Image 1: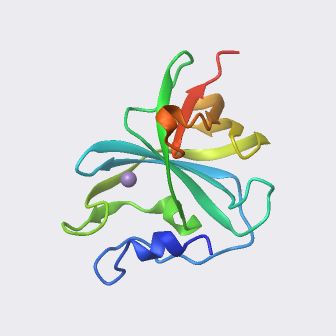
Image 2: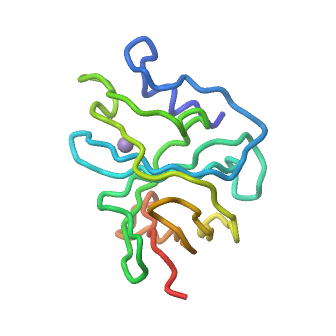
Image 3: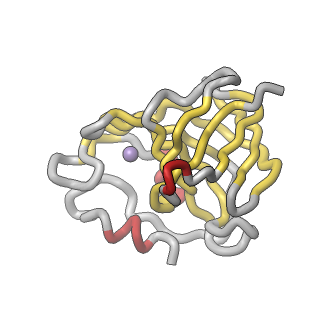
Length: 158
Ligand code: MN
């Protein structure tokens, strides 16, 4: 099941991150966590069914973005696919203790809803209605450098 990898990586008696339940309903929200871990990164999360065809439980599809997500067009950011997170994680902020997976401070950098425009296995297009990020964005599964986790995240210039 989709949250297996998420659960396997965490000790819920040591971290305040939500244990999370699977859910069959969702709301097309997004969050971007600024995560000061061993390397600063932004975790971009879209609330979606786990599978591209719309089947499965609702989760937060998640990507780690090593540089600040772009508010303007013309900048493409590497986005590395990571494990699905539970929908409950959307409001999480806190400090993951030293020695635990993702140790460091997690803060919400932006959040809001989105309109899903198109979704396939290798491309997701959506309109973000956030405070910092607004407008049409895309995630494209480029598998750059032969890494199947590599996507590109960018704002569409149109
Ligand atoms: Mn992270």
